[in-house]
Length: 516
Image 1: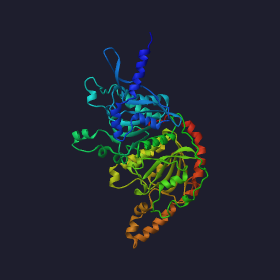
Image 2 (image 1 turned 30 degrees about the vertical axis):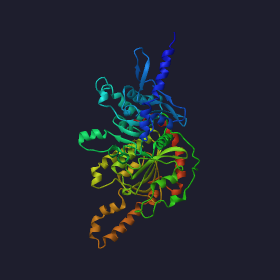
Image 3 (image 1 turned 90 degrees about the vertical axis):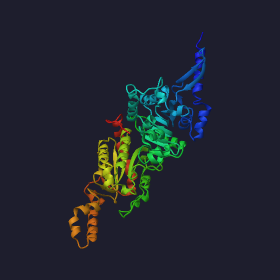
Image 4 (image 1 turned 180 degrees about the horizontal axis):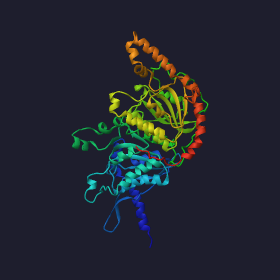
């Protein structure tokens, strides 16, 4: 007597599980222009590296003699894989089965994904496509939501974000609990035209609110890139895989490690001549903040996050002499780069990301101050702005701030970390208020009484601008150094050599958790 029959049954169940929703279910998925979750896993990780977990989870069908006649697998795929040789946990809903809405085993596997990443201290990648619970699934003998037992799945979301990098890709309709998972990520990307993110779908919205909308109108990329729910847009699923790989290349496997160094071959002493003219002499003329960043960091290394949300602020990951860094800059083509409520939320989240994973921060400062006016007040700009300033002051990672133009008001404090290096370009100007607003307030009576108020205003603004300029600040040691813009890269590479040993002392979780 042996256990051969049972061993054969294990093998058959695994074979059946790999059939997913069957040929018809897979064909329907492909007809919608979407890959299956197994195809996504294979497209992301190193070939041959997938170590699936829970292959036999699902619902078996047997005849009267106990012979296996069918098997419906858990509709969540989960396992270890490798990205560039680095181990990750990867998982996702199987939309070919029940439209991704979880069956009992599928839900348990999805929760176990966070547990695995935490336990083994490796990054977590999710492919999200499907809904949360269903009325049909929570009635009778089906899956029932329990606030007593289901709290653990929400706790694991927060624990994972505090300890390991989490990247999620929306590759189809994402609603309910999967949508919460998408938001509970350090990096999120949605695929153009085939992905939507929804608290509830159109049928539920129409029944509750009487509003008829398509999935794309309700939760397409045009909605969620602008409101900050999702960081980036992918042109197709392969682009989403590439962006996930790129994001993870800048961060460590967990908070107990330092980010990986990857030599790019870019000379640390490179001094781009274009930096001398990137800032216009006319203070009212805009410039391209992304080009400025590109002239300083390793060539081709800047990976921007959340471009359409809070567009006046630019944030992203880059390398400097091969070392990963976080980058903050301004896009002065949007309200002169003023800090809006959305911009403050975006930068605060980014600072928390860098602090969690020990990424030194470079801030290219061009800050005219918090956005003003009735819309800014209604958006609670000062509340979100103050939260950002405090997040910066509480951050542990080293900061280097390069004042390239304006640095005014309370909002300017969001660009200087505690004990950070401060360099200034000749184009820098600093003060409590921008010159124009400051003159209007401080000299209101003189301007009202002047024979030629415009001439007096111009004279006062010129005088005040000179007093707020870079040379007086450098002479008074209000900045650590006034530099030729072409020196920026070399000085920052040297600074990274100074601060890298400090990062060793910061390994481990921060004193506060990162939140979506």
